[in-house]
Structure formats: C-alpha cells, structure tokens
Length: 260
Image (cartoon, rainbow, N blue to C red; front, side):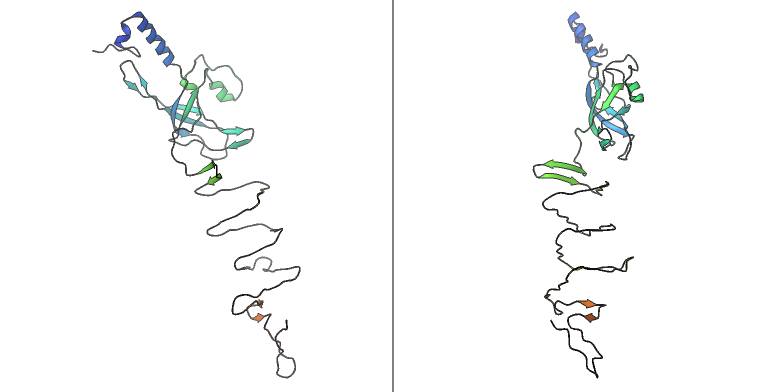
C-alpha cells in the first residue's frame, strides 16, 4: 500500500531533513511563474476593437509524490499582449489552438484588469495562476499569412487581400513594378502621370459619363506600324486618315488621298 501524500513520497519520511526539504519543495511548487499554455477561446477575432481576453489551458501537468499526474483546468479571462503604443497597434489576435507562454503576476491583478488604473491587490494571493497574462507565439505551425524579414528584404504574403486605407499613400523607390496575372483597376476622378508614357499593348477606351472623349494638347504622331494597314488613324471604324478621299470635287471624280 502506498503512503504517498501530496508531493511527499515514502522516502521523504525517512529523515527530518527529507521531510523539511519536501515541505519547502511543495511550497515552491505552488509559486506560479511562467508556463506553456494553449488558447481555448479569444474575445476578439481580428476586428478593430479594444484589448481582449483569452481562456488558456496550462499544458504541463502536476505530479504528486507517487508520480500520478493531475491535469490543469482552464484559466478564464486572461489579458493577452498586443503590440500597441498609444493609438498605434498591430492587430493580431490569438486563435483557438495557439500555443504560447503565460506569465503570472506576483499579486492579485483583478482590480487593475477591471479598472485599467493603479489599484491595490484584489486579494492577498501571491504568484497565483489566477493572475495570468498571455504573451503567446511559441511552438506553433507554419503561417499562411505573414510579413517575413530576411536578407532578401521584406515579403508580405496574404491568401486573400491586402488593403491600404489612408488619406495619403506614397511609394518612393528607383523602380516600382506591379505584376498582376488578371487585371489592374484604378478608380479615381483624376489620374495624373508626370513623365513619359510607354504602352506595350493595345488601348481601348470605353464610353463613359463623359462620352468617352479624348483630348490631346500638342502634336500627335502615328509611327509606321508593322501591319498591312501601316501607321494609320481610323475614325468611326470607316474613315482612314492616311488613305481617305473626298467626293464632290468636280464632276464624278474624287480627290486623291492626303499627301505627306
């Protein structure tokens, strides 16, 4: 029959020293410092919101003197860390299943959690798991959405969409390249290009609220094209600027084509 009781085993009863050492170890074992935990729930889910809380499960079991394990229970309403300074923040809320680290305050922090102000301890408890703070981000899997910093530069990856929302967005670089496999759409009342424009492809203008009108200031030069029609300008899909003739020039004759 086993006589193990709590953290004390049979061998710990053989001397006063062992008994005292076991007592000290049992007291120290009740001091919560930091441990690995798993997120069971989170009050926020990536939306624009204030601070949130998580429910966490400590992953390292308790062993008694006989080596019998006792599982921890869930710790509820634990504040989690957000990268934030003033009104500037990176919103990346914990998700169920995340593994991270929890640290435990030396005093009862329940009143500060409720008031967000300097307060006395809510009770006389010390180094208790009830006063947990979740830091997060350990022993987790490969991300599918991330910002990666490496010797090659900064790489931003998202499986859905990336959105910039600001009164002014500037991109400053010697070269800027956009590679879109389907299309690029720019919606703005006015689009201004300061510099030379080179287009490697066709131009199609759809009629809009302004009738699809085009206005140019300055000379327009149509270069010789490597096609059967040459470098021509066609109006209304029928009239060729380079080859058209005029009727009614006297008798039944038409004028000749425009001269160069």
